[in-house]
Image (cartoon, rainbow, N blue to C red):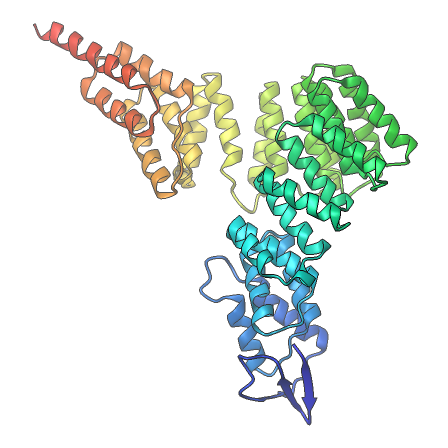
Length: 479
């Protein structure tokens, strides 16, 4: 959007929304930086539920006599994308187009991505198809290819990729998108052949390419080839990153080669000391893998490393630690870490107490589970679907059948409101069935069967058999 200053007046020459009037510049003592921050704050704080849109904020900003620079708008879109605020980013992109900013191929590529993420593939395709031939560049082709690959639209992705190769638009990023598509569709052989094509065409192979190649050989159980790729990375001076070490450790844990897995976990620990700020996810990976290897000391070292990297661990980090400790059966550490989190958390995340509640339930620690249950009820945790399922499980274990059935009905209602599927574990269903095997309570059994039929939790024949057995037993008692 061209902006021209005329004796203290700002004229937005190409803006259809404001072409009818001139905006008088208000006298202000604010610096340019302060004005940028003010606009940034107005836009970035908009929530998905807000009735005010980014369009409204920007329109008001301009009518107040403030210019909007393309650079600031692009930065705002980037900020929103990085924080997964895709609808807000799309609104900003809409405003760019509405006000006739000079749109370049990078802006169009971003818009394709946003249309896919906020609407659907058809919307992204429609926009791409509407571009002039001169606008169908490496960037916009790359954006629509990424959409096809994420959607696993194999035929469209392949056709687009072949066009890009003819146009000489196929970069490392585009090859990696296709490699990821092949890998996600379990076509390991195609991953290998496409990497060979990259080598023949002298397309740069990066660390992401190598990791996809490693995963493909691992999927084929060709571990000699995995090691050859690692050696090739070293010879080509491609850094073996924390991600690569974690990837290799995961592969070897999954196939039971624990000595090799431990080697790469140790490499992660050594490297983590030198890359503070990048090690949180790596530490979580180490906690998970060490727990699968039954290595409690390894889990605790990873936790200490995470805390030294991130002074106040996030809910997600605490969750990773609790899951690892639960898997290892370390009750004391589990309870201590949970208390530490509960005392310092700014947001009460229901996933964390769920880990502890599951731990108690699996060990029939009814007293401890009940104490935690009472605490969660006081915090209003019944509103969370996964917690409702655990509450039903606890109640049936305690023989509180009416309360257990109430939680089943509550869960069904909540699932319907959220348009989600209400799923009970096999263990929970078995607890109910065992209860009715011992207690010929026809009215309550009918309630249970009614719930199971609605959520398809138990086969119809099982429900019929249960009711028939209870009714026959009750008739025999009455006679």
